Image (cartoon, rainbow, N blue to C red; front, side, top):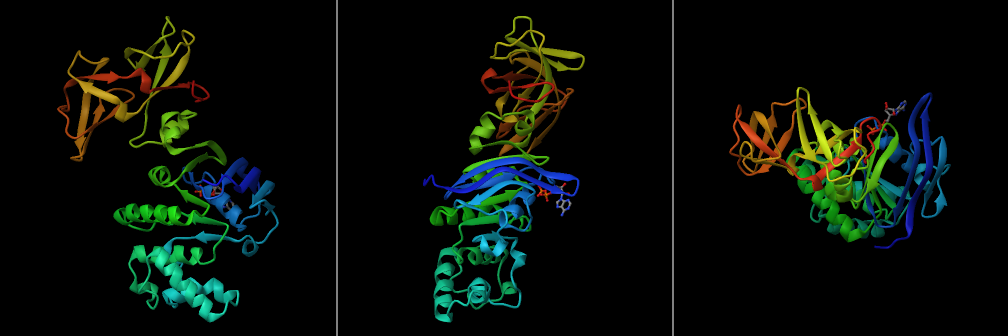
Length: 358
Ligand code: ADP
């Protein structure tokens, strides 16, 4: 990958009146990278994207695109393209007119605009559809027109604002593959906002997890999954969500006493820690195993079992509850006692108070 820096955000701040929406955002995006901004609703991801586009004015920090400071540059001079949800197409214009709108605004000669429309239609999978109106297209085709409209401008970066959120689940899965495949062909620097961590994990080279206006962690998708920097990221990345159990480090410093209210369970932690230290243990559902009673790390009663065919979700009758995911079918039944196996190599430990990874 070309490591030239395309977007550089240093110390970005955004206040809406008294509300502090972005706090000291630092993010460097190499040319050609696909970055996902992900986090719960209200964390500031759209504000950050809109600030990049120039639709919001930042109140502090420096924003550079291709080496140039953009803080005071108006949106249309930034040479970046925003891809919205597909309904942002002009309904009274054909696909070709939608695609070439920005070219016509810039007075590009008609034959050249037509040639570019055909070229982009081929790239975006719209050949043969140039004379149709948006209402005559499927949801996926409309989304391709929305992307084609961005591609035709050959921008310095593509900004995607939850582009798939109004599509049905099956179409979302196929469109996310298409967008990623398009990215692999064009190598355009892309910033993609989503609240869906699966979308972020599967599409992006680099994932930025935000909460309450700050970046909690950024990195390669699987690095975030393997080594979440704190309890929030541990709980946010991964589905179903990581189980959290309050625990205390045992007297030997190597064991961990899990606190299920009246029941305590001692497990090996795989860490040497200060005896008596209070921690939160993070156990991913897919990293817990099920065996017969008395054969696992500890025994638990089963509350309920749900099967989707491809996998089975077992919930324990403990406080806190544990979710265990098994591939395929499970022999576990509600009401029985099972043995749970815990592999210390897959145990995540967080400071009880700060939530920071230990
Ligand atoms: P996200 O995209 O992560 O859901 P947003 O960036 O839209 O979050 O919003 C971040 C926070 O800033 C929210 O609490 C939101 O209410 C607030 N906010 C967004 N736009 C405005 C605005 N124009 N005026 C005041 N507050 C705003």
